[in-house]
Length: 192
Length: 193
Ligand SMILES: [Zn+2]
Image (cartoon, rainbow over all chains, first blue to last red):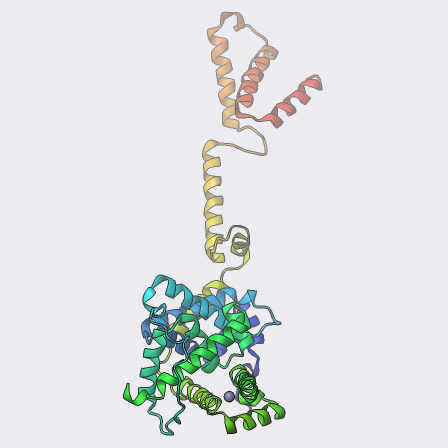
């Protein structure tokens, strides 16, 4: 009577993906509950706020998760594996549609920060996000992905290098320049 | 010298704040970062920016959109279809990559079996005997006709008729490629009947 919670909630992601490979719908439901919102926001922000495309990519990720669950190796981390699928789906979308593929005027490599005013304590979230979307679309998609994987998804540099299949040094450098660039641009977010 | 040292410290601190979150810093890391931030406005600003980004980008506290309900439903439906893909269909999928649910594969095999049976029944082939009774009768009739139209065979003996029937049968078997039947006849002939 006291324990009404399903034990599936306490299962690790790695155990659940093994059960998804055996077509266990409850395990899929639990993974969906844990990751669908995060995946959708990753797509949404990668695609400059294109919601319908973000929903389509979430659907495609779910199908690939079900189809490829048997290929997941137990010694790996599930979230890294899942976001590798998501990142590759984004790259395919960028290849098919140049609109999302980063701007030719990508200034994120240059360090434009000259002074360091404090961030406002009361941040207007909606205005900030509108400005962030505008800035994100303007930068290279690989830098955009590094930025979101690190600060939205809290993946480590090593995990991001696995997801993006590139050296840790490259990830570190992309992250450093993007963070410096965006913080320089967004401190004035109220005026944008 | 002091500028160089400051730059080295910046690189070290920036590495730490970019690579890991605050929860993963050791006590030594925390001391080192705190000492450096007192003197470095650049690193202070970077750390503050990261904290703003992490806070504002959190999809749980600041959702900008939410998954459409049909996505989950479609995925579960896809999973159930995949689950039905077992048994004979599973073998088909492993061998040829055909994704056919088991019940569909079973129905297809049943229709194929029934069709072959009907075709064989129509042809009158009885596999256990090697040759059908209707064909045997037809060869016998051909033999009789040949006998009736050929005067020198008119009074031939029963053995003669049998030889003629056998030769017609033999030719037919050769055409049909019933080699095992020919071997059977050979063995019968060899036994001196
Ligand atoms: Zn510094």
